Length: 148
Ligand SMILES: [Zn+2]
Image 1: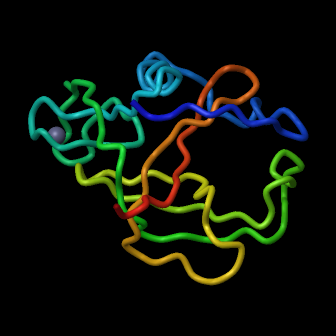
Image 2: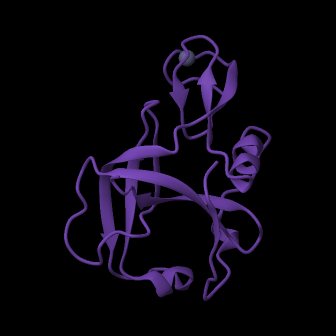
Image 3: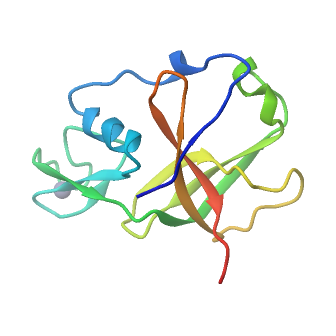
């Protein structure tokens, strides 16, 4: 289970979230409970994200939901130095990371403890956590994993 953290926003960003569809409801409901899940194809067994009704690898339409590792590695990243939306003005500058999971899927999310300047190491270990937004839905964000 991922940690779920509430965050206060200067402006409610909830209308920025994509709509919930019958296909994506399980993903969103899982996140709200701290579960990170992706679809796994019934035919080729490959994981996929974002949620899609057809496997991008083999074209099959059957799938199961499966828990995803909550740890991944930074595949790429970008630092935003200008706030295009007032909802995120309180965290400037911020880094959005593309994180690759061992299951082969990638997700984008805020890397909350990235340095304000300087590079983020490609391949850095991160762990996923859920951030609860004002309307109760959660989004995935990442934190650099501490080596023990
Ligand atoms: Zn497939």
